[in-house]
Image 1 (cartoon, rainbow, N blue to C red):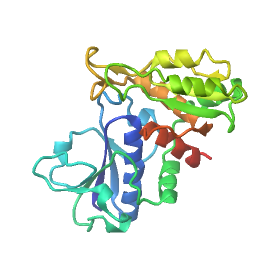
Image 2 (cartoon, helix red, strand yellow; image 1 turned 90 degrees about the vertical axis):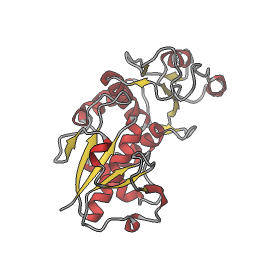
Image 3 (cartoon, rainbow, N blue to C red; image 1 turned 45 degrees about the vertical axis):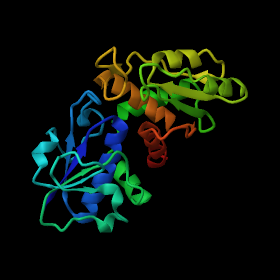
Image 4 (cartoon, rainbow, N blue to C red; image 1 turned 180 degrees about the vertical axis):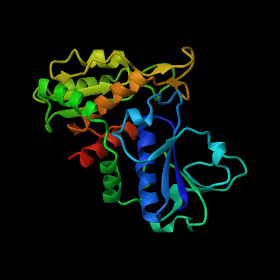
Length: 264
């Protein structure tokens, strides 16, 4: 059998979308899936530290290692090597897979043409470690969070050197004292600000995403330690149990919506 290398890089949301999409493709075409989970500053937590034990092989190799494979990626990352943009196809049946080669799959999220039930099936095949759910379930119970609690994700590291104040979101929540909100952010001061509101629940964290270069903008300048990714995964599972507000195209937000269906 030929192999499909599922190239997971970037933040966890991008990796998770690539992983589920790649597993769906490998299953459809009867290819052996091999997860290439990069240890980079964008995510320092390993594959085996996130998911329950499974039979999927996991490696960590640079993209150049696969220059002889057929590339199916959302961008052309190897100069001079033909790349098939994974988002340009009409369906999973349309991919340039003929069974005679090895392939690389990478995308910044799940392709729009991919069947949702297939994606959910892939997600059920590789559940998060039970310890994340144990921690999140305890927090949910202690804070009486349910499906009516409004979940708000405020991403602050997509911006330049100045983190937004989210004043509009603050006033919007403040003006709804009858509703309960779970607010999370990758910025400590944003969470502290919203935690002042009586109708807001915030899970206090000890670890947040950091800058590699403290004096530069956030763009391509993040360091997500193991501890910060673990904290974000716990927040992610809590958010997936709420009535999630869709307020950005963030892959983290998309992941929470997907987890809601996978674990629902």
